[in-house]
Length: 405
Image 1: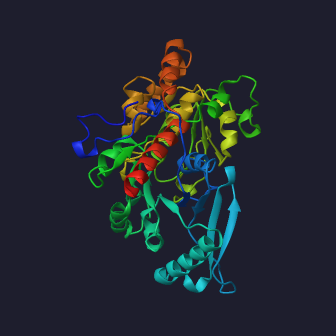
Image 2: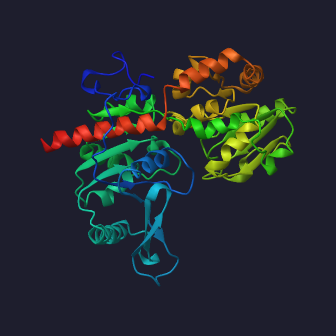
Image 3: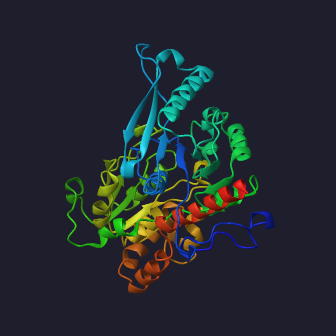
C-alpha cells in the first residue's frame, strides 16, 4: 500500500516510509535507546495505535509511557510518581499532584518535571528518545534533552471537542523539536508534510491473527450479545462526537428488522443524546481480547462516523480489523477509508441514511462472495503492525546515525 505518490508529495517530502508490506529485506536490527512516550490517552482505556506500537518497542528495550497527571481532591499528598507495569514490560508513569496545583499550569508542570527527572536519575534513564502523541506535553518535554524526538500524530487533536486553545501553538513548538513526524493516515500526512520536512505516513494497520479469530465458527458467543436477533449490524470504538448519532437513529428507524450493536465507552457526549430505539443495543466498553468474539456474531460491521472537523483527518484502525475478522463493512465517506478501501470495493461507502441502508443490504450479500473475500485477504496480506513498526524503527535508527555523524 503506497503511502505517497510523486503527484501527492513535494520533493522535500519524498522520503516517506515504504508501504507496510515493503519493509527492508535486510535482517532487522534494533539499536535504539530507552523510549519515553508522552500521551494524552490512558494506557488502559482502549487498545489502539499507541499500545500496538509501544508494546513492540518494549520487546527490545525499556519503554516509559507518561500519562497526564492525576490531581487529588485534597492537599494531603505531595507530588509523587506511580509506576504500573503493562504488556511486554511497558512502564506506565502517572504523576500524582495535590489539589492546590490544579489550575496552575506552570506550577503543575514544574512539579511533574521534577518528579520525572528524579525518576530518570534513579533509574539510569540518561540516553533516551521521545515519542510524543500530544503537543500539550511540550510544557514538560521541553525541559529534557532526548537524543531523538518523534511526533506520532495519530489525530488532528486541535479539531476535537474540548481541545485546549494552546494546542496549535504547542504543535508548532513540537514540529521545531521533532526529528521525525509520523502520521496515522494519508490525509493527515498531506497536512503535516507542509509543516515538517521529514514527515512519513503510517496508516492504521492490523493484528490479523487476533481479529482473524472471528472467522472461527467455534468461537463462543458473548452472553450479552447471544440473545440479540439477526441480522446484526455492529460498531465498536469510542462513542463520542465522531459518531453520527443521527445516522444511527435514522437507520434503526428505517430498518427495524436489523439489530444495531454498539460497543464502546461513551465519552465527551451526554448518553441521553444517543438514540434509544428498541433495535439499538449499547453493550458498553469491551476488552481488546473480547472483540473477535463479538465480531464473530455480526453480519455487517460499520464505521458510523459523522462528517465533521473531528473526523476530517482520521484513519480508523477498525477498518482493516473488521475486514480481518471476515466482516463486510459499510462506512461513511472518511477520506482514509474511501482511499484505498472504497476504491478497491473492499468497503461500501455511503453517507445519508437511505444510501447507507442500501449499502448495508448489499454488504449482507457481499459477505457470501468468495471473490470479495479473496481480494480482501490479498490486500490485508500487505499490512501488519509488525511491518509498520519495523519501518518506523528503521527511520529512527537512520536519523540517529545521521545526527551522530
